[in-house]
Image (cartoon, rainbow, N blue to C red; front, top):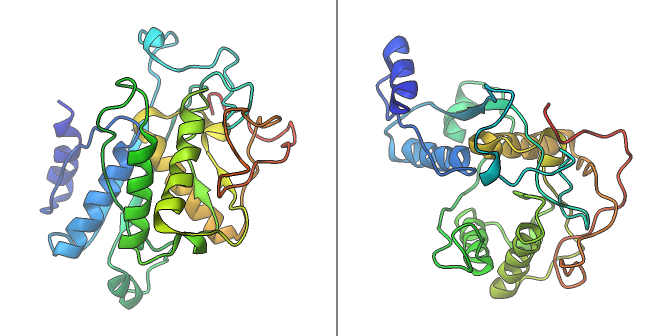
Length: 258
């Protein structure tokens, strides 16, 4: 029973705050972080843990026919040769507190979550196809909730499924978000996806994506995008607020199991 995973932790540690297993596929951890932030603001929790893990227990995946795995095992996000994602394993957990309380307790603060938003695609061309209009809406909603102007954003961490359909739709969603908010970026904004480094971690994908964004903030730099050589011709980088990647050194990341 998946619900017993977090219930067992609460039982062992004598935690009394809300405990829930979140399953929204690849966005599960980001939804868990969103819920944890709301719980903190509502006073239900004083400290919250949100995270996820993905392990491949068997050498042969029984669900391979229903995945978007790349034939090469490499994740080529935004690239013309993108044909899916490489498989990966990993975990990340975030310890969350209200900023005033973290400052009071002299905690090590790695990043501040100014805002977040959640929505659903609704009807699109297929059940698995993303909806650029819905993506534009949730990006704009998150920025407004965080009181952050889109033109002030200096980096986007994308989902980056490295598919012919998914990558262009994600870029189109960002383009529409800027258009609907009347925002004009001061320059092309870098965009990346950690799937090029680690592969796709399924339910934990959002965890490592958020962790990468935090590290970019801490280091003050944007990591290169592995396996990017030629831009996907279906992505209109000229119209988009984000910039295309220069070719990344071959030695950077495998994007498969790691």
